[in-house]
Image (cartoon, rainbow, N blue to C red; front, side, top):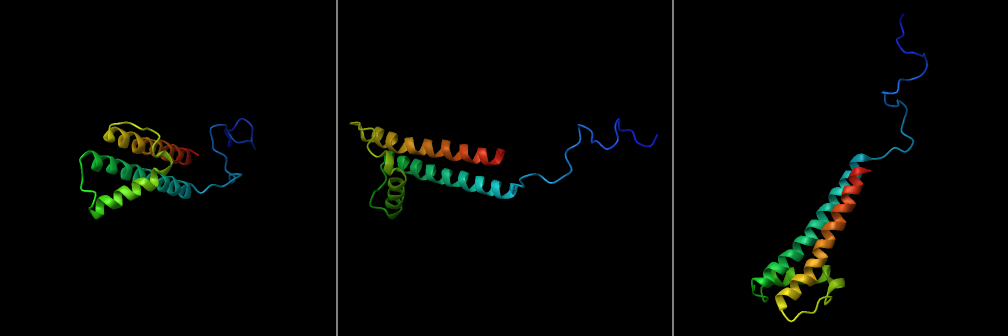
Length: 118
């Protein structure tokens, strides 16, 4: 007996299909896009977290670096400005800049994970 298959001409169940995929997908491109989205979300959250830290530590706001970080954080958190209006300045900055940082991380990492899985 030369052919051990039960029925010749049919492939066994445990073997992957040999033909081309119906919709070929560029796995490397999806992974690069996921990495880019992941990195952008991390950088955005990093700027927001850095501004919170600099503000709470009382950094010199006349410094060029602190002005750059503050301007970038304001640009990233434009949509969440003054959602929370507290009397305590530190708590207000923490909440108004912390909320977008957390959302950027959650959304960016979620999209990246979805791209890596698909």
